[in-house]
Image (cartoon, rainbow, N blue to C red; front, top):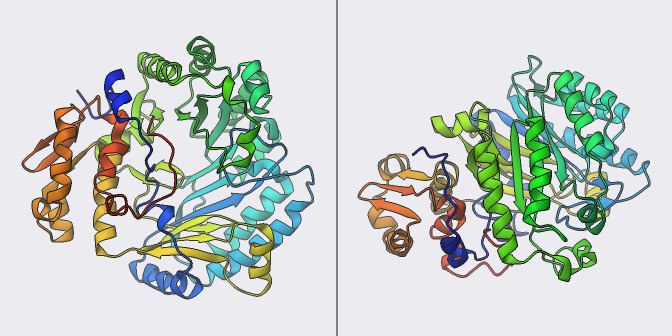
Length: 462
């Protein structure tokens, strides 16, 4: 059995399906604080330059033409397309401020545009932003970088895809969620199969190296049969990757979700059935389970990275560039510089005001101490590879694993008894049945959860 096999154990899932972090970072964003600001960020940039790692750039484009009711992203729903002008003007100011902090010979190995809807920008604005980026950062021009963008097929034409490819983008994720018209109406996302597959074909015609499809299960009116209809249509067009997310209904945190009728949501049992059939259908179609909702073809770079031990996890999900420092641009964006995480101001007014006064828009963050870095390494290893060799951690962090994590290892014993993992003298191996519950395993090593310093509500693990 490989580390990319997964077994669906209904009883186990029901027992362990509790709320917990997704660990796109450790410490999680709940631990970010406003004692971390511009001064601390500049210090971390200096450390980053001394380490000379390559860079990853993330650009947050917050605008959407319409709001999808399920959405928990940081976005601004508007019909006013001219709002992008002011946003690009301020992105230019931020790009210049950020570029001044980082050595200009550091290669950009990874670039990602997220949102919102990045293609809310028109073709000229896409070119403008990429030109600005090239002027101030060392982008690759040989197509060897991992340059990706999130696409709403309703906001992209074949010409748009050609422009993106010309600008260096070579990977994309397409938001679909569900093709069922009744589901689409209930979540305010009307999207045809034809426009979705037309964009996908345009990307293939332009030579995009990887195409991923995003689906969501747990939306109003969904059931196993209808979701399998959508999944079969997706499998038929053969994407390189799929992300199949659990819808987390948290209307107190995400205002658009208040427009979803809770009585129309599928039951917990139906959601488990959808997930089980999804795993079976994708496995039969030749996809492998990467972890945390992600599936890919065996020859996709994510699957290859997992097999060779180089897979990584960041705010965009699973990635292949663990060695990069991440600079976040735009309102709400998050970066990882040296031993820190940081986040930009969340509202346009605050973001604009900071930049108009010549200030970096960083408003909160956290500097990792030695314990944070150690625990991040443990959690990342488990999250990405479902196994951990204690000798490797000991050599890297100069600790005695059994002594340092004595309490955690004791807390893993019940998980071992339940079949989630195998705990041996010098290793931890997550079982095929435990891989769907990897968040539960990682939570054991989360100091902030152990000390009950995390009060924010998380989504359930399944």
